[in-house]
Image (tube, rainbow, N blue to C red; front, top):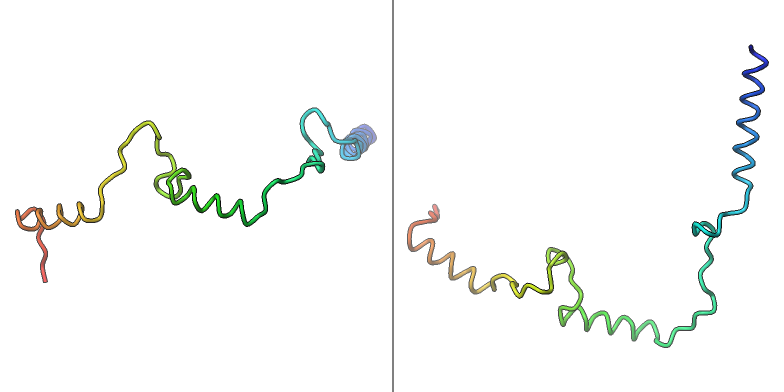
Length: 99
């Protein structure tokens, strides 16, 4: 019985090392090497400038706005609108401020 267990353990070890030594499967994408023939038409500075411009235009969403649906025009309230609502709520007694 001990010899059988030793044979099974040896076979498992041999198969696992053979699997590690096998060449990568090119169909699944393992061992993929990037296309080194690609030549960029823009400099890094140009790409950075385009990215900053897109962020300023609102074309790239970041932070809390990320999952925003572009089809919906709702953008939220401005800081001035929120301050006006707060002042109105304080005047109406909806919010108490204790000093």
